Length: 332
Image (cartoon, rainbow, N blue to C red):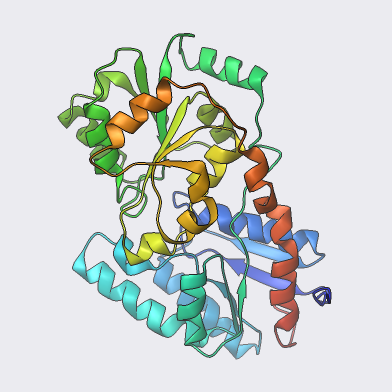
C-alpha cells in the first residue's frame, strides 16, 4: 500500500460559509486543525457577511491570485431549507459552486457521486469526533447528572441537535414520541440551541413537554459531552430523504463514543456505518422503543465501534486532498 503523498507546507485561507450555530462549523474547525497539525499555515475566518457573498468573494479572490480552492461539501442542502426560495438558491449553489473549486472533499459517498459530476478531484474525508472529549467516564457521568439536577432513579432520554431548519428537520417526530411517554421517571433533555430556539420551545409547550424537558441552549463544543453523559438513552430519527441519506450523523457518532444506547431510525450512510449499533424504531414504534431502552441495562460498549472515526484518523485523507491541489502563489 502506498502512503498518501504529504503536501509541502502551504499558506491556506480557510473560510466557513456558515456561522457557529450550524453543525457544519464543527467539521470546519476540526479540518482546519488537521491542516495546522500537518504543518500548513492556516488563517481561518468565520461568520462575516452572508454565506453566499462570503463564498463568492473567497473563490473570486483565490482565482484572481491563481490559488487553488478546496471546498468541503458537507450536506445536500436543498432538503434542509425552510422556504422555496432558499431551496432554489441552495440548488443553484450546489450546481455551480463545485465547478468553481479546484478540489472537493466530503464525508459521504452520495455527495462524492454528486461532486464527481463537476469534473474536479474528490476526496472522502470521514466524519469524526474528538476522542479526548467524547469517551466513557463514569465519574464525569455521575457529576454531570448531579449538576443537571437528575436523581439516581431518573431515566434521562435526550436528543442532540442544532436548532436550525436542517438540524430540527425531524425533531417533531421525536417530540411526538416523547409526548406518548407517561412514565414519571422519564425526563427529557434537548442538547442544543440556535436560531430556531423559540420555535423549539413553542413545540415543546404545544405538546405539554415544557415542564419535563430541559433545553441546554447552544453550548461550547467542549461542554456537549457532559450534557450527553446525563443520558440513559439517545434518540435519533432520520426520515428517508436525499439529505438524510447523504449524512453521516454527528449525534450518532457522539452517542456511541460515550457508550449511550441509541434508539430510532437511521438511513443511508449513517445506517450503513452504524445501523448495527442502533435499536431501530419507526415513527410509530419510537415511543415504545424508548421506554423499552430505559428499562434495559446496557449490554455492550459501543465506544470501540466508532474509534476509527476520531478526527485524527481523517488526517491522511485530508493531507492527500491538499497534496493533489496544484501549486500557486502563497494564499493568505
